[in-house]
Length: 241
Image (cartoon, rainbow, N blue to C red; front, side, top):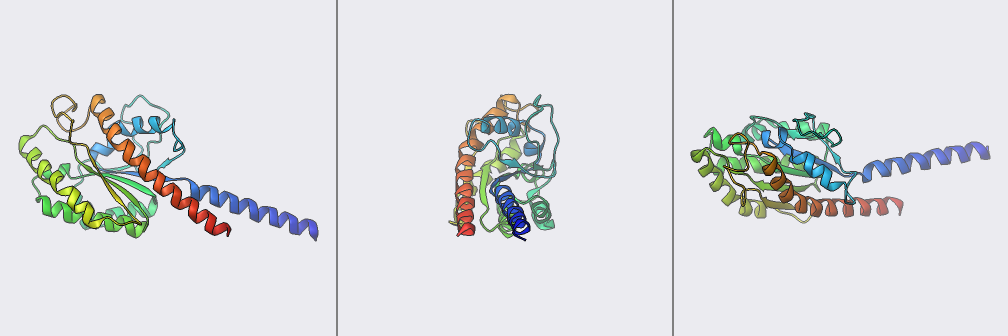
């Protein structure tokens, strides 16, 4: 009986340790449109993370396209959807399903380019969609750490004017939704990004542009990972107590 009890105890402890280990792994969702899907900044970001305590962060999402990044090692998972509009994703509740399938602790959002390019709604409508998307994020995880981009320029002048207007409104919008439990960090992907030198086709970043985008995401993501990791560690201590 003693041996059986000991064996059962060891099994339970092993299962508990495995569950805690799985729960301690940070899950990060790169979310957006084609500027998240068919690019290589995610590959460059993953590679840069390999020299940090966050080398094991699990990128999550339904997309797994390689995108000719010439990198067979990086975690390709993402939730980038080419051609998708922020307003459509929000109004159709698509992010709810994506996060249900692939829950996350940290999410980045670079979205609004297609809304601006197609002229379907102005800044107010796009921000209203962003608000719905943040609600979806927090519905999935009330402590979601959120990094939102002021999006990169494109070479279409009329559309870029709308991007400039959207970007100008994002900081105040984010501040209005920011909470201690689920902070929103804003990163400026527009400043210092050249629509003539950093794009391969007038919309998507070339290699130089990918490097610039990765370098803007990186410090904000480290901050978000730090916050999420501390939270998971705290929950682990509470579990043990």
